[in-house]
Amino acid sequence: MQSHASNEHPLARGVRLPSCSPVNGRVHRCGPGVVVLSPPRRLALSRPRLHHSGASAPCPQPRTVAAADRPATPVPSASQRTSPPAQSIERPHLERQVHRRTTYHRGNPRNAIIDTAATLIAEKGVDALSVAEITRRLGVSGSVPYQHFSGRDVLLAATAAQTGRQLAASMKSAATAAVRRSAVEAEAAEALAAAAAAYVEFVAQHRVGFEFIFADDLNDLHHMELAEAGGAVMDVLLPLATAVVKQPLAALSLVEQCIAAAHGLGALHITGATPHRLRASNALAAEAAQITRTLAAAASAGQPARRRTIR
Image (tube, rainbow, N blue to C red; front, side, top):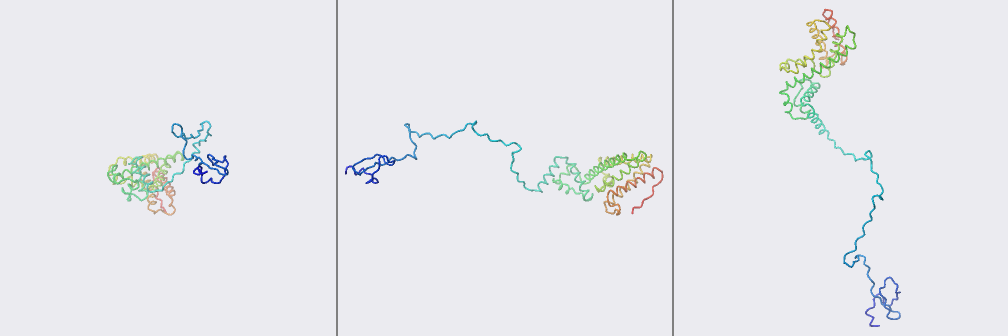
């Protein structure tokens, strides 16, 4: 008994356990009622088993699924693909600056400057034209206009030339339309009256007219484009007046009378001195057409026309 006392497990003293217990190792029966257990085997949970070569067992590979066995994932169409809306930062000043610069650089720089000058004149008049204001509206440096025009007067002459071309086109279009509507015997007088009405409407919109196109200080520059624009205006009016009176000098006199009447009504509209019954621009245009008809009838009859008093 004593020889086996050193091999007795301290937890198994006086305890009888069956030999099939899962915790026993080897069972040693030393006597009746005494069971000695050898220490149980430790479970190797944290250390992999070693092969005879000493290398660790290969880890199990993940299960792969063939491409044919995989479920088909639906691909969204182009119309179904949606992207999150981009957050826009409102920068009105920068957007306006970029728009102006883009318009200036993509188009004709010279025409852009002239168009801006014409817009400024229509808003504030000829005296308010400023090169600094033009550059500010275009979003360019102050030296850019002088790359195309030597000075303010040359810029004014170019703007007056463009105004003359636009006026000639407007009067010619109105005269052509009047000829189609009127009778054959009165088509020349009606065309001249329509041209006078178109002039009044043009002045009401652009705030400039004959006084700008035929200005003495601009004509002294001998600006070729301005001279051609003034000639285009007279090329519309003189043939119509000649068709009415059949004499060159009488036709020139009739044109001067029609210009004076139409321009006077346009100036009244700009200065705000228009009579109450003619405050609307269409009323002024109708009045200019009626005065021109009277002048044309008197010129064709060889009699001076009576003056009409505007009340």
